[in-house]
Amino acid sequence: MIPLRPVTAPEREPGARGEPLWRDLVGEVLRRERRAQERTLKEVADEARISLPYLSEIERGRKEASSEVLAAAALALGLGLGDLLSRAQGELARRARRTAVPRRPYDGLCMAA
Image (cartoon, rainbow, N blue to C red; front, top):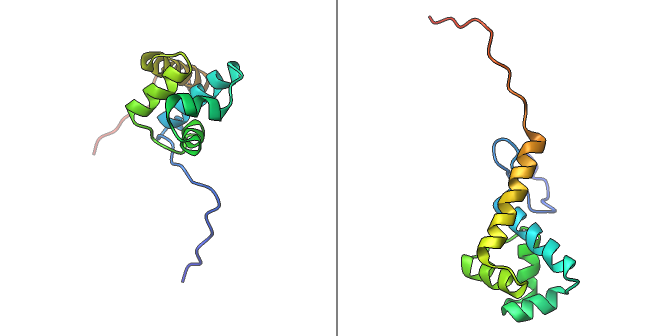
């Protein structure tokens, strides 16, 4: 019998190439914007009519929020949903450029049986 190990934190399976999850990117953008405005989770959650624990989970990338919830959180921060998603996409593109592996042309021999 194989002993089971305890799971202490949610384990995530990122994309095949180690790409971040979309919910992580969106959460990071929301948190960064909220902190830049020097606002508390409670202030933003109240204005967006989202529970404080749920907004915290979204910011930490633990919940996949609906487009309605994301739009409400973005609006509470003075952003449109498009702004939020555009910033998340920009972060994804920046990370992709940092982790891109340069490709070399294949100069090997290919054999078929």
